[in-house]
Length: 219
Length: 100
Image 1: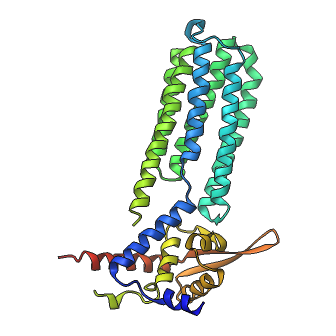
Image 2 (image 1 turned 60 degrees about the vertical axis):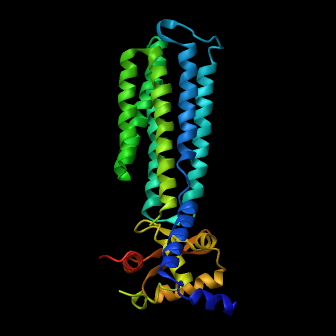
Image 3 (image 1 turned 180 degrees about the vertical axis):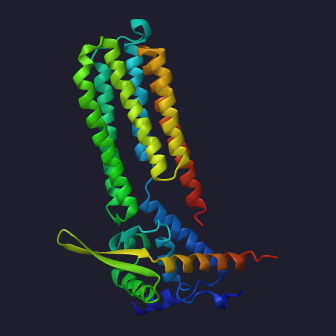
């Protein structure tokens, strides 16, 4: 025990050892304290890609069906995948923030509530009026309003964390959403699946590279 | 600048590791003692002793928090500690790659 303390007290043998210790310890701490964003982006990206992809295949433009499947399948698949993504995000967040306190933890908590309450208020509002619409437009309204909210939340997130690429992702989702709505119900699904889901996955790749770079050279 | 001028509080293997780990947190953010202990791979007693020394030097802030019935200690670099660590890192870099 005393021996440990004596060893610990010793200065690093050389400046190179100091630098190595700093790098290794910062990387170890970073890895443990800040889990990869892939836990968030891959589930959501795949949910959009697959969920909206199924919508496009079953309820394509001009009422075409490219791949026959039960009418309920796309919605159930989308909601199921979104539900799974939500659980994964919540668990990953909890594990990351559970052992920390301070402004970052607060930001994360508030952001999570923004998603939850934002979607609650959106859902209640749309549910009230959507029956008035023809079926194709009902689906379009739900999808477009949801993507609009997600885009806005990502732009806000960019502002909160001073992250230009997160902001850019929000801009991308918003523009893609507008383009899809203008193109019409079937096309909107395709656009969101590929450009939206794909955008999320691409952003995940960007963050993964950023993280790997930092872990290799953390100082 | 030579090795003898490196901050003696930080220039010890264990304390350097503690400072390096804490430096990854943003300003104002704190980590729980158990999580820090896990990251560093030290015994609780060992880490306590090093933290006490760093706290005496004004480099870390220790706060006691009560989550439920369990008290836990939250650890963070103080502003002074953050500056001291940045200066130490810059000094080490200068020793490794002296400006001409």
